[in-house]
Amino acid sequence: MPWKDVILEAYTEARPYIVNVKWFKELLNKILNEAKNLNDVIKTVQNLLESEDVVKQTDLKIFLMFLEKVMKGQR
Image (tube, rainbow, N blue to C red; front, side):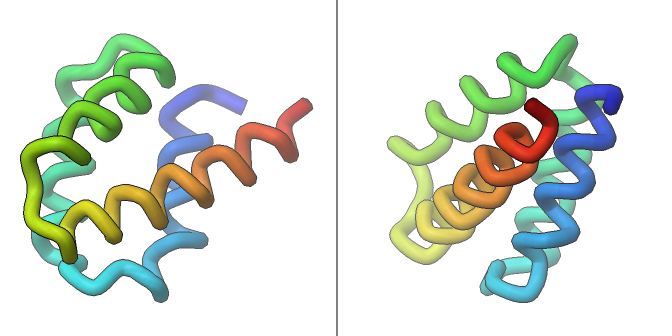
């Protein structure tokens, strides 16, 4: 599965648990436009964990959890 499809599947699964949906969707679109691969996306999200407020940090962690789940399903 192409890496962008992995990201979108993880987002789709995480979506019901994300509180700040509008912000997250805009952020994810920006990240997808700038990233060259899956590792770029992961690094960017992990870096954002240090600078965002608690609610946004939680949304990012939820997404990373579902991303890990989708990636494990690919193996």
